[in-house]
Length: 157
Image (cartoon, rainbow, N blue to C red; front, side, top):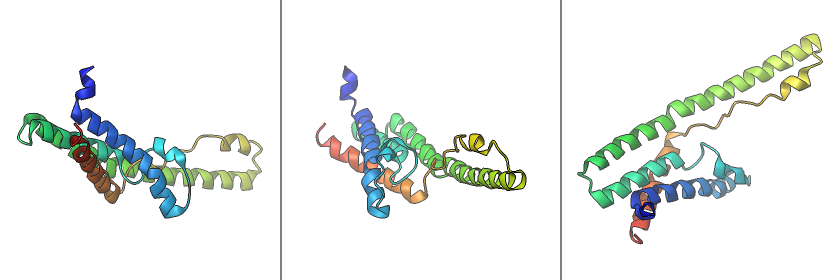
């Protein structure tokens, strides 16, 4: 059960949980929409991916030192994850939005042009997930969240 004493791991897991849960009140404060399912979804403010890797890297730096090889590996890993969260995954989400709109437009066109009887069955298909990635500000605050969580937890470690 030594894994329970692995501070970088505990810090990263705590940062993920905190970042996922805090999305609910942030969304409510901004839009007045209460969506508890945000705790289990991707995207949104703050980025839990960024929080996790930042907390992990901070934890490693605190335990093994910032000159250690494992800190360097974790730091590079964190940069790649945060770049991906704000780049590739965000673009995939924007593609999903466009594809979902094209399908809706096509369904409307077909329904109006031919009075398509099976339209209801076709509309039952699952839409692509649009909230995949993060805006750079969400990645930044996810990173700050992870660092702060790791520093706070380190005082109790």
